[in-house]
Length: 357
Image 1 (spheres, one colour):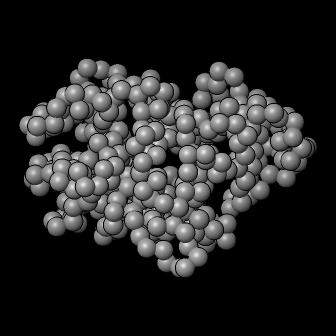
Image 2 (image 1 turned 30 degrees about the vertical axis):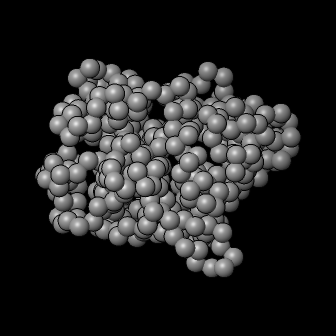
Image 3 (image 1 turned 60 degrees about the vertical axis):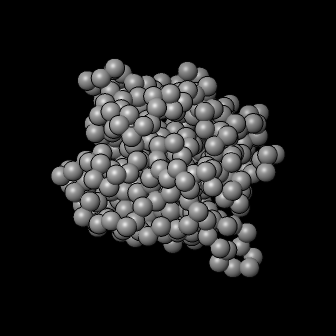
């Protein structure tokens, strides 16, 4: 079955992995680091960019065999059903088109977990004993032949389910927290992805096994340090990564983030598809809720007002709008974020105005 928007973009899932770590400097307030990696130069989509682990949805992620797999391991259908009960916005990527496929709220989590293992060798598994001691945290397994299984799954010689069957483990779908949903702007017609971002928190940093064809190098660092490296042109962060790291950067404590993510998990994700406007001194990408965001946007059409404000500087254009949710780009490495209203879906504020922290 061909999905509704398959001719326009591919579905994918990414994983924000946060791990507890001692501050590296006395002035460093963060007690955690974020895992990212640099794509190789030969990567088809955004080569050399620094991203969170993740990739395209695969048919194995939607196999009903996962339902039987969970039942055989005494995971109740009601526990799985809870993952599907979301009260907020649901972009089409979450829609399950057939009863012959696993619910998308589960299969997208499996996709994110599989990709994190394929690319970086991080296998997140359920651990009931640790779960009681560390609610909201996920756990990783490393005492097995990581690289052999990683290659088998990457090359299609084994499935992710076969890996867990062989190890006697369960993929930790329950401690992945729905974080956001991004769609590549319409101008990138030949290569677009709708991507669900999940967040996982760990109590220690796992060993990393980078997949040689996809991963040039990887980094564990704080949100602020990664953003600073981006501004200094030492790395280039893809736009969703700059947005997500920016709103993470205002929260320094991993325990607070874990509680927040667990609380927000069922509040939905408004589809974030940036729409471009040209300005005299750069480019503006507006997001849902901004005055300049097209009404009833179909996510496919080009913006007919692309050059409407092209002779004006960004600041003048900004002052003409009463509701802001936008990113102003001076160039590829310098962005400014503006949001003068409540965040969508009860999320973190992109400028740090978080009353709950």
